[in-house]
Length: 335
Image (cartoon, rainbow, N blue to C red; front, side, top):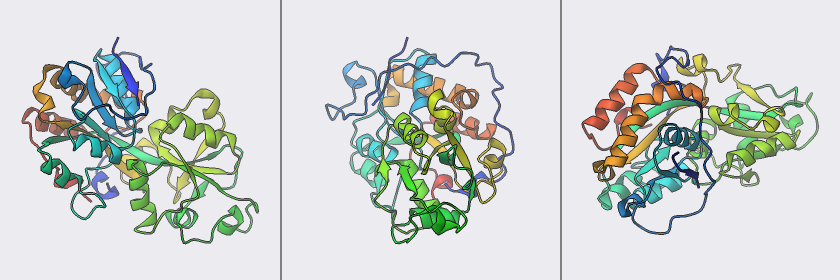
């Protein structure tokens, strides 16, 4: 069994009309049962370079997908979940073979230009889309009033400059109780996309509790009747049973985060998901086989790990991009 240890825009979604169904030859069950490891790395070179496991870092959102791939297809992969941005920091320093990313690699104009950082460190990378996500607004199940929020209301709830602190500040008919906010920390790609799509350049408030541990995040919401949070759709749908019974998602602008609405581009908090592969690492047989297997089965696996599928042509394009070892960022995904 493999060892898997856990350590953008809506415009690009137009025309995605195929429902997310598990229609493929993949028939395995989810065998992911890896140990948790959210700590740092011990060196500046990849583990696999010294004969160890394939080193994957980055997105906590994508960690369950990569862990499933490693366990289901029997690859030795160390999967570290530290957030997409923190993952790019390590990846572009040559410290990982693969970076899982819930956001395209930031370039010129971003707070950190990771495209330049990779180039400066002679890290050539292959950008590969693997799935589709809907950032899901999550509340406690006992909250029967905030079932539908607009992007503007979410902005007012999460903006640092906003005076909103109670449910009644959003709607006078709602309870006069403090909204308890939970989310992802700095370094998270999910946080970055949420800020881009909801806050539109405004600063996010700094008084919310944050974690990269998705199980912890869902449990916080499950324990707090006044909770409001955000996470990937796959993380929400795969929450542990006890937590799942106590949480519920929220419509955004009247639209539910379903596969159909997400693929049609109607759900406003949609995004593609990626893996970034070091071209140098791809020269190794174990990495090459893992990435090839990942791309061959990604379309079928997405529903198994509760994420949504890209159009079939995107999977074909990713396989060709990898086979051709085409490096650099694809302008299609850049905001």
